[in-house]
Image (cartoon, rainbow, N blue to C red):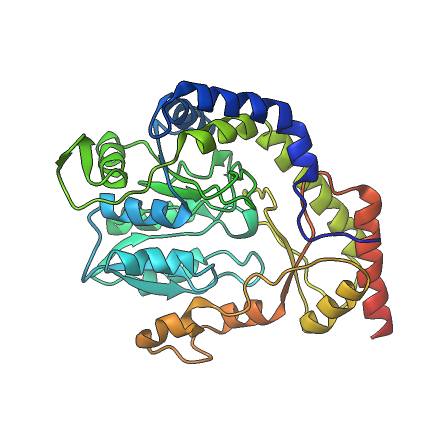
Length: 369
């Protein structure tokens, strides 16, 4: 049996007729940038996120950069980030001239540990940038309490968790201004790069819309040195179609995760994902941990099972951040997660027999090695 790490086959089958109609509408409109389809999707995604505003942008990295710019965060400022995240979170902070200040995650959830945030706050701290990693919502109420106490902004990195919740509140609605990615592999993925910003703050929404469009709200009149980062009409139309299916696709991911949990709960040698109390996950990734990660990955590959490592090198040990001076051992939890994590196949349409095949292969490995 051959099982890829990720397949779009079932999702594309669900949406293909509607995508075709959307594309024809896009072509016939003769308007391809910041038109009616972008406005429609922005309204739809704002409703989905339970926020007043959504601003479509070019990609997830730009979404974080523009959110930080809207808050006037820049040179001399510090932003608290997880030590365990994809490097884009840190890159956005660096791109506006601020300094990322890492905080370790909880060992069980892999999300930033609220109990460690306050010790990282300094007079230079301007914001907390939590990442809803692997699809699980962070403990946002605790993070919000800290931000309120210290007068800090919150910028959620919601690239992996559209639809997850903390005590019933959806991701992308907790922060002062929040960012998400619609990279094709995300739970809500475009057919190319795309991203968005969500907020309840009208002034921040207006500023973000200005920054994404060359710093301009009126053509050829530029209020600031902005960017060219606009969600295009075609991708907006596609995303509007796929947004209708997202709740059912997320439900299917939870079905797959539940089967993995049940099949692997008694398997010695691995640690399964843990969801924090009051939080939910939409399982963008199903990531197990084991000291035999590399050997297990090789074995599963031999059985025809695709896997991926998210992420093999934490940001503080990347060459890109050598100037911060962090050495191996500086953030041991992030380093341990990086050395032991293995993501199993999880995507809408993954069949029950395929999940059983994967879990039996894992069980066999640990019984024989």
